[in-house]
Amino acid sequence: MIDNSCQFCDDIRSVRGGENIFVFRSESIVIIADFAPIALGHILISPRDHVTSLANASTDVRAEAFRVAGLVSEAFGLRGYSTLMAEHGTGESGCPSNACCEHAHLHLVPLNFAGVEDRVFSRYLASGRQPLILNGVDELVDFEGRSYNLLQPSDGILYV
Ligand SMILES: [Zn+2]
Ligand SMILES: [Zn+2]
Image (cartoon, rainbow, N blue to C red; front, side, top):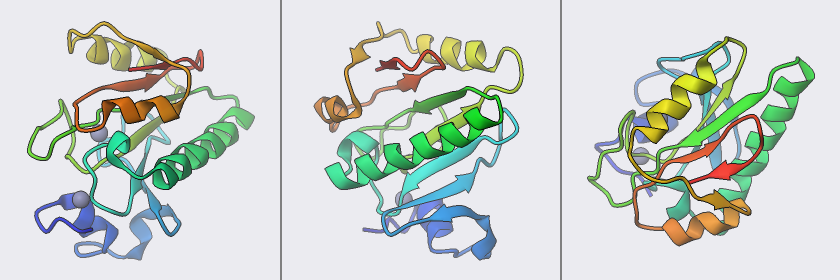
């Protein structure tokens, strides 16, 4: 499904740019370089369909997004970088998150500069919620339709 007012949907259909904004494309997801990277190599992994969070995406799409995120993290790892993974799922349509746009996207940030992890974590904690630890991405489905912040710092633990 496409949302005509969504910048990401425009990008995914290459309305504004060429084909070369994509780092990677599969049937259900795309990887785009972040528009305002906080570190070199900062990318966004996004479902092609307009959903407001990965919790609202289908099981297959969510699994594909995290599978690809794992592969990219491994590749960064081979270059000596640990990776921060974060999503600020907006839940209901029209409910803005604290940054970016409401089309679901997973941030992947290689921690190649000191302090990036702290900066992102502090922004996350500033939302005022007590973080919960998830046993796996499948548990994200409990947050369907709600706003949340998902964070996986380099310790590998998944927080919501
Ligand atoms: Zn969209
Ligand atoms: Zn974002």
